[in-house]
Image 1: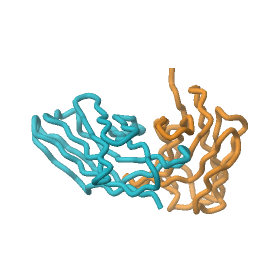
Image 2: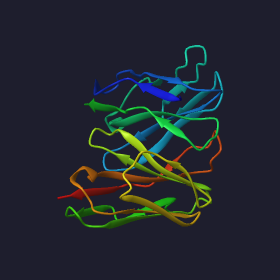
Image 3: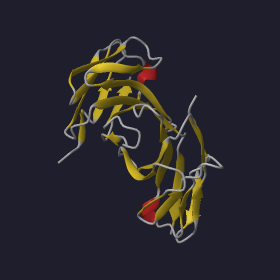
Image 4: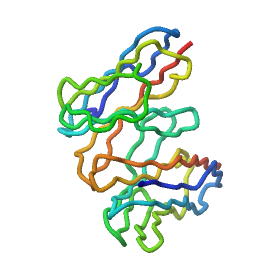
Length: 112
Length: 113
C-alpha cells in the first residue's frame, strides 16, 4: 500500500545553517506530495506541495522537488531561522484523493 | 475567519466518562477527517466522511463514534474514556481531489485522568 518514510529526528541546527529533511514514498500511480509544518500547540499547516514529477514546491524559503525516479520529496532550506523550529511532516495523497498518508514527523530545533 | 474550527481546545476528564469533540469547516469541502496524534507526534487517521457518508473507518475502538449531520460538520463522540485515549485529536477537511491538501483545525488536547 501507499506509505511515506521520513527522516527521523530530532534535528538541531544553528541559525543560518542549511536544512535537509529526507522523505521517500511508495505509491500506486501518481500521488500528490505535501510538506506540512506544526508549530508548538498548533495544528498542521500546509507548507508546500507538488502534484507531478519534477514539480518544485516552495514557500517561506523552503523547497522540495517531486522526484519520481527516486520516489523522493526532500525538504530543503538554505538558511534556517529560530522561528522555523517546529515539527515537519511529509505526506502524500493517493489516487482517490481522499486518503492521505503521513510520515512520522521530524522535529527541528534551531538555536541562535 | 477560521477555516476549520474544533471545540473544545482542551478537555480534561476522568476515566469512564463520555465526551464529544465538535468540528466545523467553512471551506465548502466535501470530505472531513479525524486524526489522533500521540505524544510522539505520530498522526493516525481515524475516520473520514465524504458528503456525510463514512468512507474511511480505521481500526479504532467502537467506543469512538463519528457523526456528520451535514458536510460542514463532523463530530467525534467517545464513550467510556480510557487513559490511553489521552492525545491530541485533529479535525481536517479537503476537497477530496488528488492535489487538494488537507486543512487542519488547531486540535483538541484530551487528557484522561
